[in-house]
Length: 113
Length: 111
Image (cartoon, rainbow over all chains, first blue to last red; front, side, top):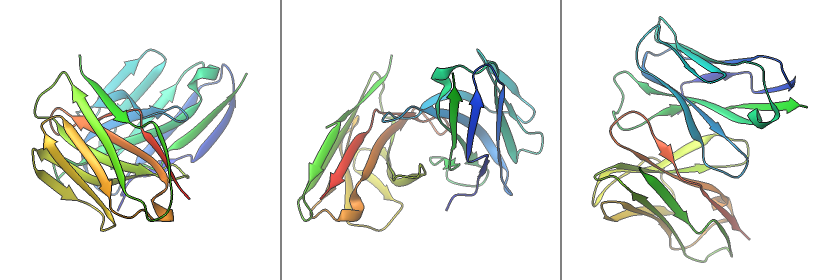
């Protein structure tokens, strides 16, 4: 079963606001990934993190690999309506199968214009 | 560049009918391939994965099966659909053991 706790479950914000979401686990992860899923489509990879402490940006998105290797966060700055969607964290569990990812349950983001 | 295709995009099937969903990847060789199901409520459930032709690992016991007849083709099947098989089916590929890239999905409704 899933071992990632993703929060918040949902967010309703105003356009222009910053957003922060995170994933935590009791287990150590080797890799953290963040995906965005638009309604009716497949998830799209936003950011991939491979080293503890790594901070990576992709436009208005910034994600960090926690120093303990047990958490990661994703920030979105100056949100716009097209940021609406479900954001998933995912990770490769240390000591687990090299072929499988563990997924969080997602954060549903709604942006009010 | 690599692309992943799924078809059909949507499917409505009666209970007890068979199922075949197809996934193909272009622009890469020997990818790892995955089938996920996403029920309403968002979570992604891994159903099957394959690291090579004819090699299938099942994650959840159910009435679904998967096959990989060619390097870049992954098929999800059922002999008799159940109501509970309704959902959004996603295929994904991975070049190695980290990032996975998803297809557009197939919306299956079983009536």
